[in-house]
Length: 175
Image 1: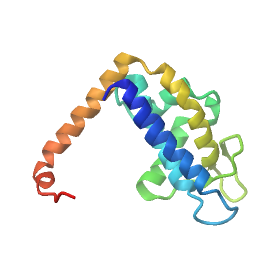
Image 2: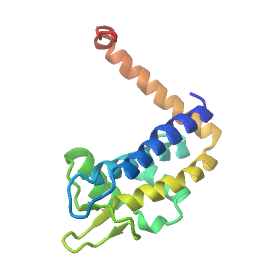
Image 3: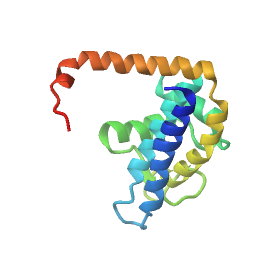
Image 4: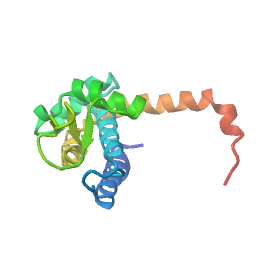
């Protein structure tokens, strides 16, 4: 996949469009469940990790990738400490679907704050909005050589996994 297609299809198509649709279609209702706080936060935290690897030209680690994305693309870097995002939010959501804090959708800054009932709260609405704004910076900073290097690593990994599971894939029914 070339860089232009990646930007248009993956970054602006899948990532941005999905986030905008989720954010705008399911508006939060105060103190109610079903506000998609967790999915919004988890998507953005995963996207920042993934895109940070493209800025680096390789996939290093969650904290390194996210730090690269935040420091390169966000203007309010102090609101998003990568270690806190990883240890207290992302790992809880990804591994337990239970953050080690709370997730809100009030749309206010700072993005991480002390709540009335939780010591730490990440505002998913603010995170999503800041991330969407940051995408144009990501696109402008995406270096051709680093993109090619990271994409090759990704495609090689996909091919390895397809070969590993070739028997299963070969037996799948067609639709």
